[in-house]
Image (tube, rainbow over all chains, first blue to last red; front, side, top):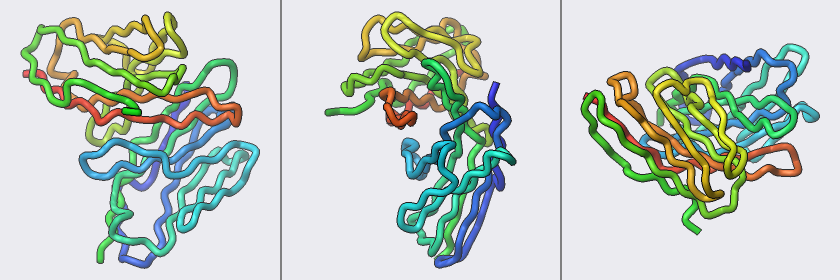
Length: 114
Length: 115
């Protein structure tokens, strides 16, 4: 099955700096890559996603890049703010039929210091 | 529109006891799933369903049963609880989007402790 590796497990940045979280996946048939944010004590929520026919996607301060050849994708957060502090999860889903199983990485705890 | 509703929010069990975590969604989503979240382990898929009457195993199915008799409900059953099942459980659902994406809507979570 699919295996998703996520790095780093923890990341601390100063407010205003950029943060980058990287994920690699094992199944070359995977075609959908979302990112979820989970604030302390809350449920995970989608912040951005990308499909395999796109190399980059941006939404204000957040961007995701995908390298299908290398099988890795990254989350970029610019101008970080204290409210960006949370656990971030990447995920991958294999294409085909009714297979909608998402495999998640182990998460990155991002701390933005004021 | 309540989204995904999980009950109970907290539960303490003794080893060997059984219980059911309830999950209901009112968005007419075909896909429903259960994840467990443990420190440092991320979100691991337990079981999932792509429609009423259809269920399948995820990464960590042992010790758990599910059924999907209606589109709205997807209960998770622990037949004989073990301390290793102490965790936070999330139910999540999504539609099958034409764009190829399925955006999961998560419930608020259920914290289970097995003594």
